[in-house]
Length: 326
Image 1 (cartoon, rainbow, N blue to C red):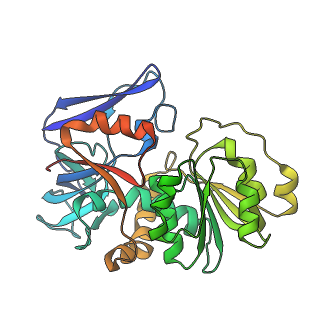
Image 2: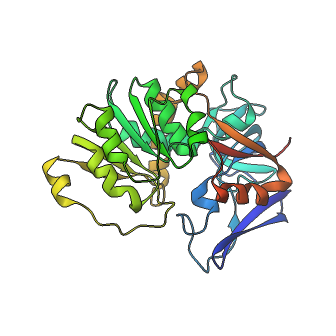
């Protein structure tokens, strides 16, 4: 079968298509004939999270959807022929092996690109807003980088929960595309003025939850934008600023909570728990049509490198997806 492998080379990430043997499912696993796989910035952009220099090449991709082809020992929740979506290490391939405990049935109303974009991205948003952020209906959420995949997912989940959303982006055109998803207050800025605009929108009360997906360059704006007992979820750092100054005075007097949202150190038991929470809280919203993943572009299987370049240019709103059997 054909699959993509990825490796750090200098200041970039190098992708290579290889021919390899068909992967065989072990106990508790399923082999899936993959239909689509979603791109994730943390994997494909150098310096943004999932890789270190001088590491051996590895199978690329970790979020996909497809049709169950073979079952490993002990698999009981799914059958051959079922349409599924979930975490899949080595997802940019014709076939993938998935752990049963991290797989979900594909809602009939989602197409393959939407299904491939669902699990990791929306589980991250769920962790940020609900699991650690304890977001409640009527609260205000500030989402920096709201037009990214996770940003859009946070917007959609927040609106489904009955919250109000302030979202920032450096592109007014990209912000305009999110009005149909319920973005309450669009902020055309990468950093400057975020706190002032948030306070104005909330009658000086401040946001209840802030999503920091841009990085350290907007940390202080997020701190100042939060209200009393606000919560700040650190999702990413696309700006590369990972050592910003922290205003301890504001953190202390406002009783703020800051937490990280990452899968880097999660063990299998943590991943299974996250999958269970996704199935309980998010999957029903997708099945009902209340939350539908936003796919910006779909690429043929042989154009992953082009998709990676487009992701680096930061022009998309929502997810970029590789169609494996387009």
